[in-house]
Length: 498
Image (cartoon, rainbow, N blue to C red):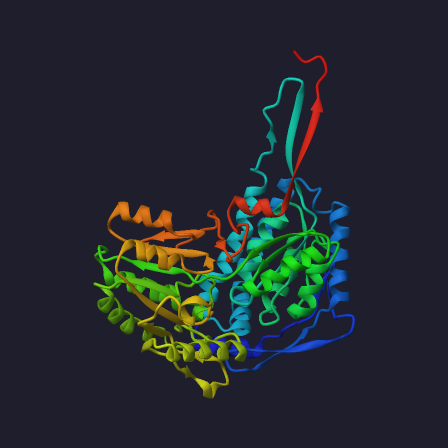
C-alpha cells in the first residue's frame, strides 16, 4: 500500500483499550484509564484500561477457574493443536490490522510490522500447536519390580509480562508453549504498547480458545505487573524486559508463593571481526542492519563492535556510509527503514547516552542527533561511535537505541576478553575465514547464541536466551516447554515381577 493508504487507515482506525477477562471486554473496576499516544507524531490513540490489583485478581481467578475445570487443560493435545492452528490462521488473516496497530503503538516501520512481526507471531503459535501432539513422555529404566512413568503436566496459571519493542513476537514466545501445554494465561503488555495484545486475545477466542484461558490486563508495571507477579494463584512468571525489573521478579516470587520466574533480560552483544575475514564491507553492512533494525530497540542488538586494529579504519569507513541509509522517516511510509523511538522517556535516555559517549572521549563517526522534532515524534539518527573503550558507559550499559560502539583490538585473546567483559551474555558474533579460529572463539564467548559470519539469523526451532544477567530459561524451540510444565514421576510397584 502507499503512504497515503496507511495514513488514511490510521486515521480511520477505531481502538478499543478495554481489558479482556474471561472472554469479555470490560472496563477496570475503578474505571481508570491512561492516555496512549503514538510515538510517530504524538497523536492520541485513545484511552487504555489502567489495570490495578483488583483487576489482576479477577483475571487470575478467571484463569484459575478455567484451568481447574479442565476446559482447556483436559483437552486432548490434538484438540488444542487444532484451535491454536486456527488462532495462527486468524493472526495472518488480520495481518494488516495488527501491523498497523503495532506501528502506531510503538513506532516501528510498517514494512517490518508486516513482513516480520505478524508472520513471526503467527508462525510461533502454529509451531507450538504442531509440536504439542508430538512430544512423548518417558519410562525410566528401573528394575523389573517397578514401572516409573515420567510425565509432563501443565503448570497452571502463567503470568506473562512482555516489553514494548516486539509486542506481538514477545507475547507469542510465551503464549505458544504455555497455551499448547494446557495452561491458562494472564498477559500484562507494556503500557507503551498494549494494542496488539488485546486484539490477539480476541482472535484467540474467535479461534475457539475457551473463555478464561487467555486474559489481558493492560496497565503500568508498578501496578498491574507487580500485582501479577505477587499473586498467590500464579504458578509461574514469564518475563521479558530490563535486568532491573527482572531482579524484582525474583523478589516478588520470594514474597509470594515462590512461583517459578523465567526472565529474558538485557544484552550488550559483541560483534567480533577478525583481520582474516575477507569481506570487510559485508561484515560492516551486516552489523549496521542488525544494530539499526527496530531503531536499535532490541535486546540482542550488536551494539559493541570489536574490530581488529588492522582493518578498523576500513570497517569504520563503511559504517559511515551505511548508517545514513537508516535515517529515520515516517513509519507509515512503506519505504521507511527506521522509525520512532517508543516515547519521550526513551528519547531522552538515548540522547543521554550519546552525551555520555562524547564526555568520555568517544568520537562520533555518524549521526548522534535528534531529528524530525517538528513532527512531535521521537526520532534519533543512527549513531556510530569510534575510539570506544570497553569501560565506557556506552560500551557497558544497554542503551536500547540506535547507538553503536566500535572497539579496536589486537589479539584473539584480547577480543574474547573484551567480548566477555560485560554483565550480559545474550548474543555474539564471530567473523573469520579461519574455521579453527571461528570454533575457538565461538566456544570462548559466554553468550546464549553465537553467530559465525552472520548475525541475527533466526528460527523458532532454536532456543533464545542468555548467560549471566541476560536471564534464565529459554524462549523458542522445544526447550520452552520446560518453563511451563511440571515433571511428575509416577512409581508403580509390580509384585511378582520376574
